[in-house]
Image 1: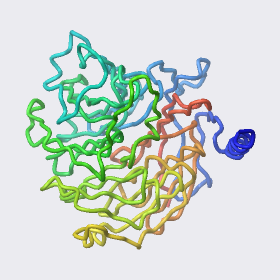
Image 2: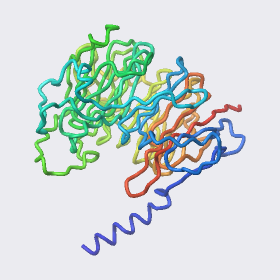
Image 3: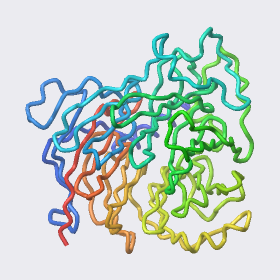
Image 4: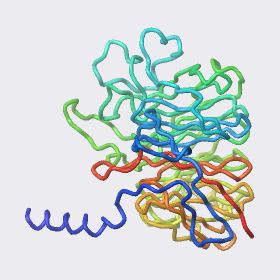
Length: 429
């Protein structure tokens, strides 16, 4: 036991230079100075510094463990999912003033939002008279119908401490920023993605190795319906005793995370954070048809740009790039090993990635090192870095490529987080 304790102490000490709390001042800029791309921290919304003196450093109590950011450029606003605040906070993209707080709290007064309670063959294990009275912990989001609807997944319902019951998602009308419908999901949904042709929503369940498909071909929110719940590998059977405490961030099977539709909307790709491959789903048949291998393990986020597929590898601290046209040729094979990946070493704890609208640069939130890495996509070379409040997890870039928003969630026992940093992007070449 003493040896184990000593080992853990040495491990923590060895990681401490990386896993340290960082708070940076407004005006912080990327290095190298005058590089081909520069980032400058121009604004911040935070809930940790009550004595901030800079006019662009705003205290906001609604920022509580911010998980993700989604920019709706056409309406000049953005949405921050505040996980522990049970809220989605809406801000003006130009002034960064708060526009609204959307509370994910459901009681007897708003039960009309629930069109259905059951999700396929799932059953609630928690003893409760009304399963639709709860608070939801918002994780990730995506837009559909040309920005009309904003979809938000809930890590879990507040009464389900082990995230083993069906969770839920909210559909927000961005005209009013009100929740207009709540749909059930499987356990612990994290990623959510809309197909480019606006026909399908995919909800990926970190909790049990499944991915659900929603038909959104109608423009009426009440017509949206599930068509399939697809198992990747084996569906986890969550037969845990109610008095057992489970770490569901680790006890998650394949830990399905990054989720994206191919540019043609023909395939859905789902990364396995607990593995080293990407599951491929045929959208027409709703079938898991195979896997793409040859990838580094611990895949977290997937994005497309100009028919290039980009992956963030969390533990390895790498961003990988591939030409999807080459991959697509091999997809008919049930197990397709692709070898022509280009790699960029961005730093330990690579989380969310965003590609600049011009396709020439990629930004990576590097959690453990509390920085943003800037990658030139033509040769996958890191051309700059910028400090960020610890510990960054989510990010989004506006359509015109001038604003990057980064959320810092913090870490249990280490502090940090409760911060949303807004950077100005300048391309200097």
